[in-house]
Length: 267
Length: 319
Image (tube, rainbow over all chains, first blue to last red; front, side, top):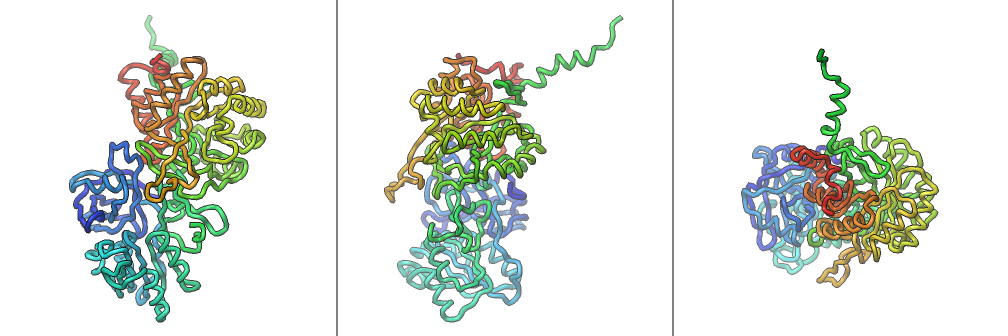
């Protein structure tokens, strides 16, 4: 069982829309806010529903320890996320957290430059990480891509938290550079940018492209995702192929994994 | 002269009331009728921070094979109305690691452990069972003849009475441990399946495993899990499972049954007992609600207390 994991109810304090199908909920969860580490996640569910039956996994996006609040950024993709979207402030959700491991921020300190590469709702785990990096005195460049400007609406919150340079891009050119975030990132590397560590979260095609452009020996950490049943290593649904055969279990071995621990050719 | 009441006699009178959940199922005596189903509870230890394993009637391990098995490629699950499809493919650590690393810890935790076992061929089952024979801390074996998510073995043994009989009798000859046989609801006739397992020497029958199902992604026009088909579990299957328990109990009231299928709450437990199960296994609910099994023990205890009955009084009452 993940250390410190608790199963509890939390009241939604506010529900903020970031455009169609993208929203953030802030929940009252003082104990979690005080103990969670950047990169960890929670399983969220709506009580007394038989459909959807399982909870859904979400990165813990941000914390406000002084208010005892935890924020989740959610994109509506199916029945589980839709029923969370419909909940008004004041409603309760069931929370299983904290789950999984955390981004490694050890040895990242004053004067270090790191990169954050995010695709779409893959921006979710980074506000809390940006706070930690900032506390450590590191400078973080953000590379953030989406299909259209709407996918980047969370910039309204996160832009102010970026301590380095913000690079935005969209597939349709509606915001920032027109093209893929991995191309944008590769271009910066080609110009000579170097990073102490690279943190990434996004869809599988983004991870695959990023794994290809990472400099040899780069220290990178990917916040992985796969359809999860339980979130604590029991159902064995959320597996990712490992390089020497077999699988890693995203929820238990990760979700934060170095890209070399995954066989991207089998993803 | 009137003496003080004899403490031993008083205890004998009280014991049945205090132990209103004590359950006998075939050769087994359980603390209570609430167990956790194979494949939904890992090796038990994963739940040790949330559930007191010693308070459960039993735990059934992830399906064990002789050697570790890596399972199917992802995606392995998808959600369906009131349930889920899975094709994990029996990923497991193998008998050796189970015996070396997991079973001693389970024993220390006071758990009543049943090893769920499977193989590709009859001889594989026999070897697994022989490997587990007499292991300290093991209460019994559950033979998985009903997994729909492997290309060999598994469900093939559960879908014909002849194959079921042949396998169960072979395993029976190889083991003196209490033998539970987990039936496939995909068999053409569940009662025939039950008869065959009993004839082969099963002490207890557990039912049901998952129903073979499928979900197709309407965007990609491909099955939503990589194996194509998967096993359906969760509340969606409960009425089907209750019916099968009822049918077998009606046909063979003397056969001890372990009911499984979509149990999420107290009334579901009671429903299976009324249908004829002596005990139940909680499955998919463990994924969404890891503390559910132990909570159900408490809830069933209060239910029985309020009615002044023992859990065993409920068994088969719907007939």
